[in-house]
Length: 151
Length: 361
Image 1: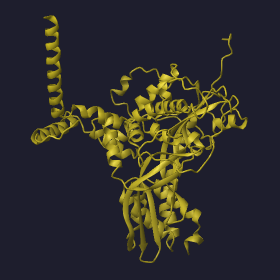
Image 2 (image 1 turned 180 degrees about the horizontal axis):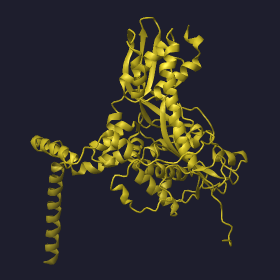
Image 3 (image 1 turned 90 degrees about the horizontal axis):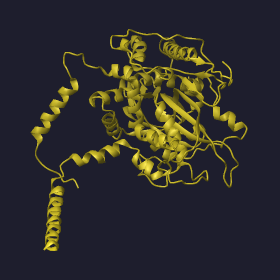
Image 4 (image 1 turned 90 degrees about the vertical axis):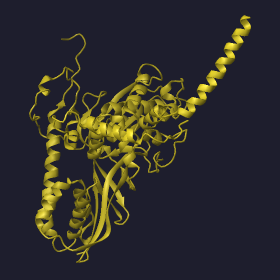
């Protein structure tokens, strides 16, 4: 199965999930899978800065806000699949695991990886987001303006 | 002028040893962990990320620990580290409209669609010291409610529909980058916003306050203030598509300002904009006020000579690392310099005294 068949959208989805996942959480679900497959580096893990851009007025012309740390790498499995990773932060092991998952998701072990790695990561992220959204919702107010002369 | 001096190595080593000991403080008190600083001093961490111009909470926590809580020193450490990082690239402009808001308020519309959401704010607290925190306060837990609709519409868009506010023209122009090219004046708005978002909070606050007190007044309302997480996307050339490379918390402030119109524009509201890393509300509001003040020329307003309207004055003095570097260097040895000054003053003084004596005779 080629990457095009998997669909770019699906791949963007898991690469983003892996980038945002806390490194320890990814290790916690990935490492129990057992022996990491043999691979060769195409690009060894490298930490750098990515300049984050905003827009004037939120919707206008781009401007540079400041950088964020990102670690990237690329590798090829013995079975030929190429995995890439761009993950937030400076953890090289995080990037390596993310690239391994990206490569494995392109091969026959994809269903296993989806169930054992991606699903719990997605669930944990959704739960964390739900928790913040629920706390935010509890702080929603209804201001009302006092009519002058009353009360 | 600073002239290099030799010697003092032993004293310097001893000073740094003592610094390390003082940093640790009383050894019978448990040492702070980076996780403690990151989680419990998070607004300090946010400020260091914003002014250090590098989003990495763990590094900011380390810098704060190393700097003994001196935030400008911590920002200095982050700026220095930042220069060692290879630049991987730049992100797509983040979509703050898709922010997952912890907080979102409007001072202009009480019935703002999407609601007024206070979030974890100091507002409405009584600013009385809470002595419960002096003991261990335990683990508080906040109440929850059913999450609101995730997409929160932008307040300025409502005004824009009626043409009541100046339009923000979308473009994909490559913005200037002051970390790559030296500052040039006049700067455009993109460059000004870059300088302001990493500028010193106290300086930007003072400049904003000066406009409120009448030095270039621009009648701001906080149209909208939102704080929350946005995903950062970047185009990956080797893949040929964009991916999300992480998530950052941002504070965005849009001010709505009165504008009587100009020769080319009918009366309408205008905008000031603030966007800052982290939960950094005071800074974002201040940035929006200063941004608006600096836009006098493009809006055809009068320059009343207010400091906040002077682009070069504001931008050249907003960076606390440049400022502290120049300010603090005067405490370093200037012996040679001072020696020549001393001789000069002695000579001038002798001349003046001689002249006074002659006049008296």
